Length: 61
Image (cartoon, rainbow, N blue to C red):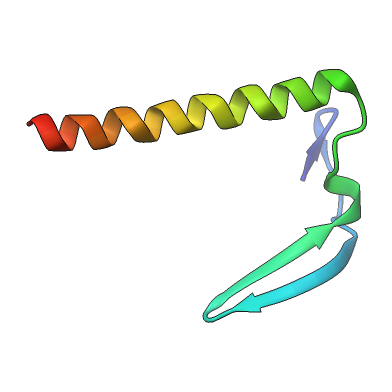
């Protein structure tokens, strides 16, 4: 996980198995500041729009 320009070893606190997919929850991956939270929300928003644009392009040719 990237933190302040370096990679830290994740601290895994939970592990879930869904079929062939493993989900690991790292306690040091949570956002700690309002700025980090806003960046996560903005990144998710942009990823969502990118997905929607790709779907639209596939449907309209």
